Length: 304
Image 1 (cartoon, rainbow, N blue to C red):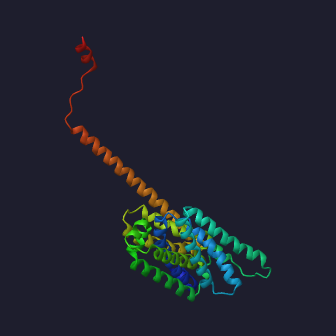
Image 2 (cartoon, rainbow, N blue to C red):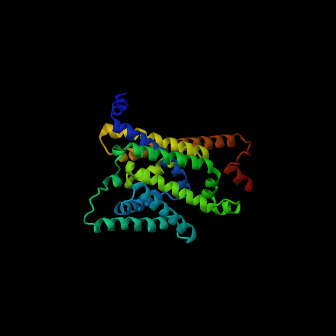
């Protein structure tokens, strides 16, 4: 029990545990729609794009969340528009938009000789440095995204699977895509200080991928992915404290371990079920009446 009780004595760990759980659940929730849209790379790409926006926000002396969030929202809209209207594909659109934005941030950093801000926390995460304000913002984003997904469940689901048919049935796919882009940008922005730019993609993709191995139904998939993300975030924090490693890395490595176990177990179950099915089919076939085979010798004798 010391594994769980000792870290809770520290206030910074309590704050970190809260935000890790919230961000894990948020990434798990949004990740379902991302993998179904076949845009798994967008978490990695959009985080790089938002890094460029964070640099610009700092230079212009804007609030980090406002500047980075607005930049990420516009980047996500541009990615969706490019991927859907120019027949380039999501991967190409993500690569073009996000790398250009990241390059802009790098260019500004290299140009500004008086640039003293340390962006290491944004790159690798600094979950133990979160404040009460950060907790409030992350909780508000999680509540807003959860409410939006609940209210727009059918429209979002329809747009995700078949946007063309959704438009025929009167779904305003443009508005749905815009709302999704805003939610995704907000998710990436609040996750940057938790898992860092370099690990956001894994935090978004691993929970829904794990849940997808466990169910084929969409509703349970959403619930499972959210719960898996929250659990990995919380337990990953305790592992980070116990082994004195970066929290973002601990969360992602734990997620990968969980995915590997589920992948192995479900694969074994599938193999056993297949063996059982084939064995049952063979047994059923053996019980059917068949004509007795004619020995080769008798066939030769009859020919004479």
